[in-house]
Image (cartoon, rainbow, N blue to C red; front, side, top):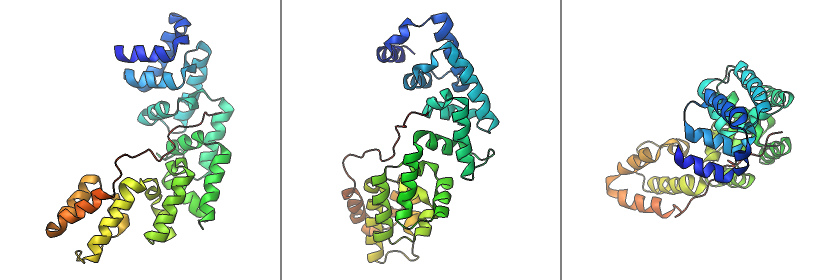
Length: 269
């Protein structure tokens, strides 16, 4: 616990002026009821939203937790949401209910384990930004129904930057020759790194096909679903060409990779 304390208070020095008995301890005890005894998670939550250190906040926090639990968000889902977007738990009652209502209006239900992901994404994006992402898909020929389907299957897709979405859609449609329906059914393909996963695997598969090494055609979409170890195992099947394939694969991997998703959420209202 000691390593976290120094770093935490160096970044949140104003908390040292808070009452230990009236604010710090009650807040920590309450948050631990959701997170458990993981001190690292505890400090992450308070670092991302130190507004929890307030007596009057505990009542609001309690009400919001109770409401989210009534929506079926409990246990590990509740604690995960608290770690990722703690500001949700400090929202006004009306704002939180509006957020959940927007998610339900998109077709999610309170008994769906995907609801929490929809709430997370919608809390990260303003309605204007969410609309822009929607319009971006429309501009590439995806219908509103397509957008709803993609969002329901992969809510995190709408947290991906517009630039990455544009590049991904163009690559899959223009280069990989995907039908739009493939992206609608498997929208998580657009969340993969083009540089580190999509393009290198595409190039390798092209070599395999050009050499006619496959007895039965294997779809690129299925290749993308393989884990790294599974993909390397797939390559190793072609014993005589394995070295060439590995060289081609590694040659297309960039020395450094950046995070493509918009993991930094905007403050909730």
